[in-house]
Image 1: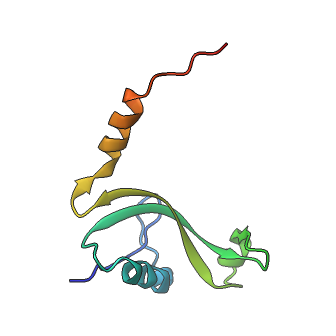
Image 2: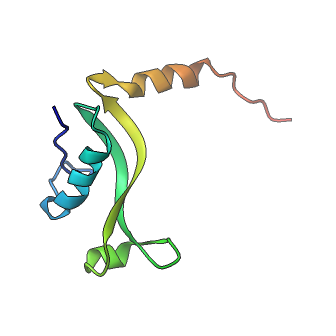
Length: 94
């Protein structure tokens, strides 16, 4: 079974205009059944820097930068990271 991907705003509104990006993400992780990723859809300039205006005005090819994997195949990864962070000793200023 393949992952069916969609893209949503931070408010949960679907972005149907980026279905090609969502399909490419799904194809890149064929072993994953269900996942929630946090990231940004941007266009890149010739130097590889993000250009949000190009995305807004549809002047370039959109691509996705994943910042975080929040859930994967039913496992909430946020709780594991929080537990690991809490176990790290706080650094004391000198």
